Image 1 (tube, rainbow, N blue to C red):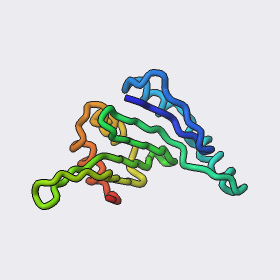
Image 2 (cartoon, helix red, strand yellow):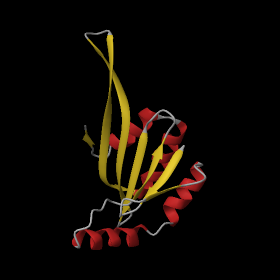
Image 3 (tube, helix red, strand yellow):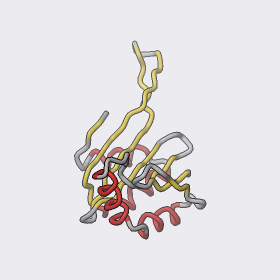
Image 4 (cartoon, rainbow, N blue to C red):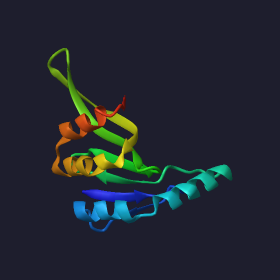
Length: 135
C-alpha cells in the first residue's frame, strides 16, 4: 500500500512504512487541527491550498483519502474503477468516487482495514450507509 500525508500547501510526504499499523498510528498522532488552521490562514492570504489529509493507494488503483476535521469527524473520498458492459457485452471502465463529509471517526478503523484487505464492497457499503455523494 502506498500511503502519503497531504499538507495544506499541496506538499506531501510518503510514509516509508505503508503497513496498516504504521498508517493508523501516523493518522492518529498527526496534529490535523494545526494543519487545518494553517490551511485557513493561507487561504485567507490568497495562497493556493488543499485540505490536509492522508491517502492510501492500493495495488489495484483504489484510493482512499481521509481528511480529518474537528469534532472527531472526517471527510472521505474513495476513488475506484467501475466496469460495466455496453450493449450487454462490451466492457467499459470508468473511475467512480464516493465522498462523505463529517463521518464520525469511530468508523475510520473499519474503513481502513477493509481497504487494506481489498474488501472494496465493504468500503463502499460503509461509506454509502452514512450519506454520500456518488459520482
